[in-house]
Length: 192
Image (cartoon, rainbow, N blue to C red):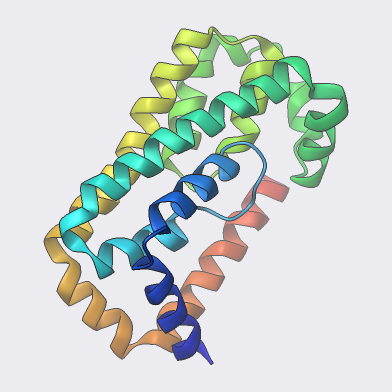
């Protein structure tokens, strides 16, 4: 079953519309969608290493644009959309605690959330709610998402074949590790 799922993702990664799908996932993940674009980006790069940096650029641009949508949700639609999203991710209490101090460290928060597994969408919405300077938000988002996606692309471009061979030989282990990391990320968001 895992092998079929892996093969399906690799086939999707080579589809002629894969970049558009990656852009859609990257955009949505930055404002409301819980699944990271890495799940599609990594197999796309493994399938076409020569396109690694184009793939990273698409993910970065779409992610920053999605971040702007999250900022808009926070600044204009917080009561109707933002509050339920923060409640879904268990961050409504963090909003009250952080809102007073957020703009002092907002650029760092955007950088950290944009690079780490912390849900970037929470920070994009929060940035809009607190009125973080839009140029600072955009610049921090470009740097953070650029680092995240281009480092992954560079590593896969440089070491892609051995990584792909390792993943394919140990597919069950890799899938299990991925699930553990994903669940740990959701747990950390909920309880930290």
